[in-house]
Length: 130
Image (tube, rainbow, N blue to C red; front, side, top):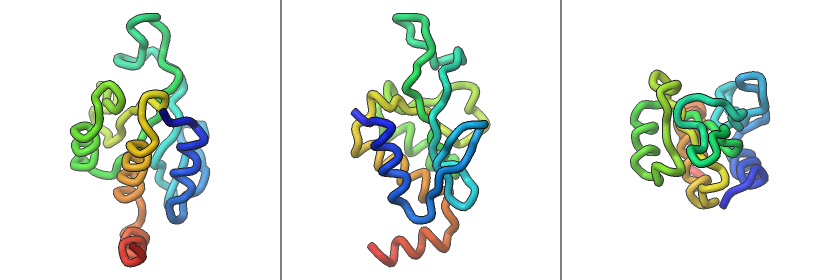
């Protein structure tokens, strides 16, 4: 399963990603737009462990740039790993359990976020380099 170090390595390997701030905490950003950040434990619907009644402490928010990307992420990954809650109904963000997602899936999810949030110029340059 993935770790904070994996998230940092994956995000920082993408073109022009920096550590910035989002919701008052550290986030990985490209061109001023967050692509991923840790979510502090909260008691929102769907973010509490039903076995313990305690908020999940391993959640990350992955910011996707389009409705289609959000739908793709929700359809491509295990719903026990990548999911959404009513709080995100009007956004393109999804939540992911860092301690349940494997590293390859985390790479795919963060790459999808970067691709939909980075400037088109960067995305095109990256495709040319592939």
